[in-house]
Length: 104
Image 1 (cartoon, one colour):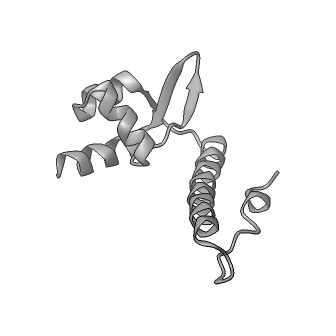
Image 2 (cartoon, rainbow, N blue to C red):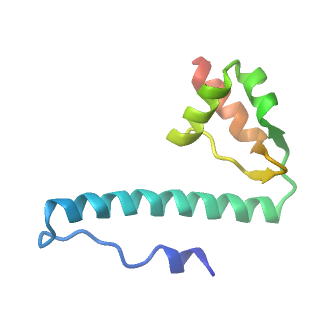
């Protein structure tokens, strides 16, 4: 399926209750994350991207495992590939995270 099929059909109107609006806002956030993930997946398939494992990311940025999980959960870095219980990140994302996390 194409990503546009996932991203259609959600809109917030004044006729919805407060709870429905909250649920729709969460769905819109998930929709944005899905679009980002699908774009990343297409880039990985289209070009030869340098991938780094989690150990490299932790040592290069200077963070712990828990901090890496938190940054990943909060959307600061995205897992590009999971393979044999290992997470791999794009090199450009690792460098962007290092610069923003260290304030360089």
